[in-house]
Image (tube, rainbow, N blue to C red; front, side, top):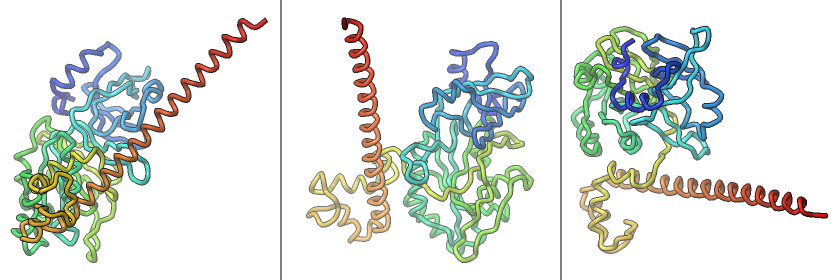
Length: 360
């Protein structure tokens, strides 16, 4: 398999040449399930697992391979299995906070050129959710494209397009109906040989259906959505990198039940640039936009120039990121205290040992 068809480029070539030996070879991670990996390389396709040394040196879950990574691998003595010794540096990643109460980054996919943010135009349509996806996707270092699927069930398409464009921060917005194979051709504008595209979105928005259209076959399982709320079941259970027949690479992702923010408040400066610009015109620099005099944000809401729901979404995400920053700082402080405690304990033992050496 030609590595360039898998997304190999000068960036990875440079980093691989710095560590290159006869035993190792580069391979793209196409699927990962419970620390068992499937990789593609110019030597073929292999099932793989990480080495003990790699596992020992990994400081967090974010250091382990994810779909889209370029692994540094070697073959087993039998030649039918691969061992992953490490991963090459990532030029992009889409990540979120780990689901639940764990304060740690979860990297979903890596080394993606374009993120397709897929949203449904049915009863699951939600501008606030799109804002959250945009805030996360902006930090991925990949190009962003918003896809509004299911035009076949939407009666006010132009209104929805205008609403999404008003919060899209200038990123392209396209409409399509994967069920009717309508509008799919616009995706060819982005799908190119060696370009990796990740489909991100909630369950039931049609990610797998769109990819099936691109493949020209019903390869990925798709499920029906509930008529009551347009929510879908999690048919896609794992991430998978797929090579398209005409060139290009796509990654199908399970729908995300939780989409908790990562990074810091600076993330919002891009996604909510309109609000940030308004805030710059407030009379007081530390304006909370509640009841302070001369508040440009509240004035815009009263005049109808700013959707109050968008403002509430901004405040909610800001609070979430501030809480996350507090959690990170607390964990960092606790880790530093633990390291200091260990150093003091080690030093104390050395002093005691030194004293016993000279006791008579």
